[in-house]
Amino acid sequence: MKTGGNLFIGDVRSLPLLEVFHTVVELEQAAATMPLQELRKRIRRRVAYEHELVIDPAFFFALQHELPQIGRISIRPKRGRYHNELTRFRYDAVLQVSSECAAIVGKRWNWSRDGWSIPKLQQALLTTRSLL
Image 1: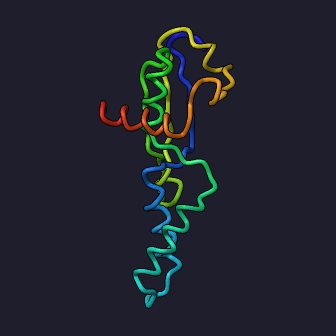
Image 2: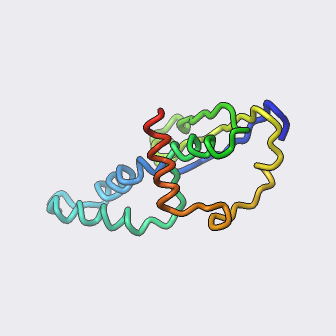
């Protein structure tokens, strides 16, 4: 990728909105007489058993710390005429390359080789969030 190029990552499900998403789904399906405790239990279960990829937008800012070739980052809410799952709980990310970046595009990620783990990723995201 040449300097000044953009990497578009589209239709990403938002991790910070995951619980809200499942709350909306459960509220749509719940009977008016369902006890609040049961509703909360169902929402927690849906969140716990989520099987699709969801990414916190902060991930891309943490990635920028690891890959200084990434210059500007733009997080864009999905646009649309209708308010639905696609427009309310998804976003697009655009990463602008500030220097030669061919290594990023062709790189195969190996979390263990690169020293990453879930706790390290969580810490990187928390650190980045405090910088925003």
